[in-house]
Image (cartoon, rainbow over all chains, first blue to last red; front, side, top):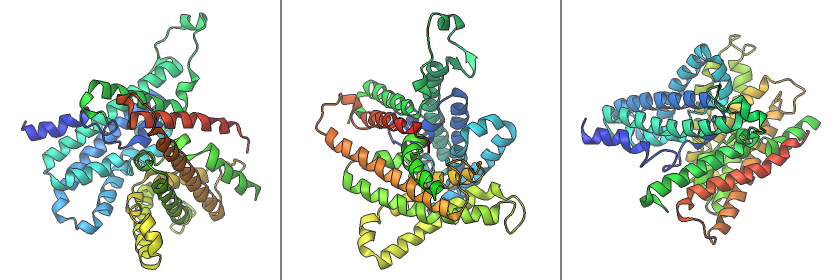
Amino acid sequence: MATNNKEAFVTPLSQNNPILMQVLGICSALAVTAKLEPAIVMGLSVTIILAFSNAIISIIRKSIPKRVRIIVQLVVVATLVTIVSLLLKAFMYDVSVQLSVYIGLIITNCILMGRLEAFAMSNKMVPSLLDGIGNGLGYAWILVVVGAIRELFGSGTLLDYRIIPESFYQFGYENNGMMMMPAMALIIVGCIVWVHRIINKDIVE
Amino acid sequence: MVHEFSLFLRSIFVDNMIFASFLGMCSYLAVSKNVKTSFGLGIAVTFVLVVTMPVNYLLQTKVLSEDGIFGIDLTYLAFILFIAVIAGITQLVEMLVERFFPALYSALGIFLPLIAVNCAIMGGSLFMQQRIGLDSTSSQYIGSLGDTFVYAFSSGIGWLMAIVLLAAIREKMAYTNVPRPLRGLGITFITVGLMAMAFMCFSGLNL
């Protein structure tokens, strides 16, 4: 793999992470993470849509007129999102009900527009595809971490499989209902940003 | 009238776009550095919501749904049509405002193109679509064009209030001694989290 391609794939995972560094795509990251399963599904959906839309836009980038490029990008993304949304409804109905409007909101997820504008419009197809996958996974791992923390402490399970044993509850352990509230999602992401910046000292503001 | 009023209060405080459903978070975090610009963005968001949501409501009920003009269920086209309406209208509004209200344009101008991809606008329309199907006794129910106007306006006001509050806190926070790695993004997230907790006290309101 050429260094350029490798860079396009690796930097979004931590150094230039879409959520922690570029502050993109926060809305859905916070809203779908009350449980682990929707978080994983959401992360994968965004990765797939981002990879394909990056690849498609970079193939047709030379024939898109500058003035209408936003609309062209939105139409490509909206088509892909519709396909994913229908697939989820067909094969994973429960999860698609939990995700509700947030699948539709992938269209306006800033990660997509941000990467299309910043990368796919000026790069060849293969690096764009890798950039899409890299950014998608960079987004997905944050969702998975937040989802796991919230589900573990909020309901004592992971993927609906009980982790905290029943005997704990008999001794008076209680689930932290706060974790299921939207407010905690923000605070957990804040703490992840904190830890990430302690590890990577050079990006402290 | 009672229904409109409770929908109005509910959308501002209980179902606040930022604190309850995280809509428009990206621009919310990025632009809330000072009160003046965030007020401008808030007004622009409210304006675009009030213009686009009724159009999408008519599209949803008169064209896409089963009782529409085609008589078949076309709701799978909703994503593409909604985003096309939003992108088109923002472009149109930008041109009209530039032509007829230059003063307003210089205040809002830079935000309008950004708003086309603001999740608050698309999210508002998608929530509106979901709420049409609700039970008509619920205070979240949207059953007419009037309800849609009320919902769009009050969600916009809720968003405006949230961003101005955060901007005010951030202006004050510039003088505090925040731990270095937490500065900037980290502390902003935690502040918003605490604000969301404060707003949770409204969720007991029975409207």
